[in-house]
Length: 245
Length: 109
Image (cartoon, rainbow over all chains, first blue to last red; front, side):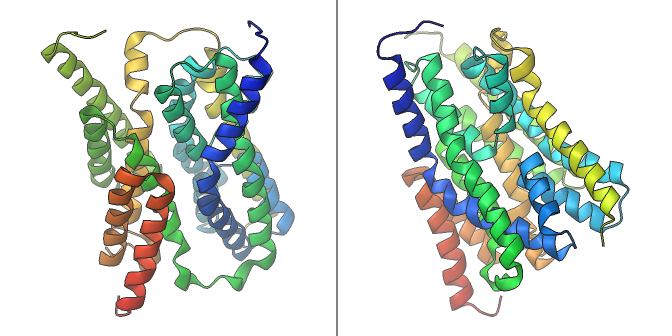
């Protein structure tokens, strides 16, 4: 990796920028992780178990899934499979991050993988696309900036939820914070016709394939959406031969 | 109740499996470049995964036992519309704000 005199400073600035860009997600991560703490305690886990799950897995949607399936007396391997399928989307994130972060050392990549969550992924990829002039080192620093904000809140509020638990009445409808979060993440990504088409196809397909067991409908819908987006982009490129570039 | 042994087996396997999913491409292809067709499709990952996650949650919320709730649909539209123009934080506030406001105004739902 090339080291420039200003490299250290720009990396620090990139870290801070990531930290600030992800700040709004505290609004979501705090209640969401707290909700997991509450629900897990209600399912009969003790505080150590709740924290162990949040630290080892850090993937809320799959934790809720695993918990719900175990409570339904599903065999462990069914609960495991269902929860893992929910996380399959992150294989796509992992691939999408390769062009930006693939240059980092093995250990750093492992740490980045552990910390990979939806919000930080969405914010980081948008920034990388908006600012193609970013240096590889800056991209890594930016990624860690995003995650260093979210991760402590995830642990802390899971703990708080597990301890103070039952104090949050269901009338606050905190369950709705989850879809709202994903809507808020999607809207700024809709920057072109193909992006809109991808989102539309994936959204409709998720409803049509909701019956598929073990959350596989999500994976099918996402794949259909991203193929639709890519094909639409290819189609537009053929219609309008490169005049710029 | 969830059996202690089941819980720990599941948590350890889920933690390991989730890490391997996250590490998959980043670990395997580190430093290498991906073919153009892959890069083209990867651009649309976020924009395809997120709607697939939120659409069923909006249309068939668990809190209403899967019944479509007009208040939640309107709140979702508010979050979306505001998000298009003003970005993430306003989108979240608009969505939750609309939900609370409508639940307060229309307690029948």
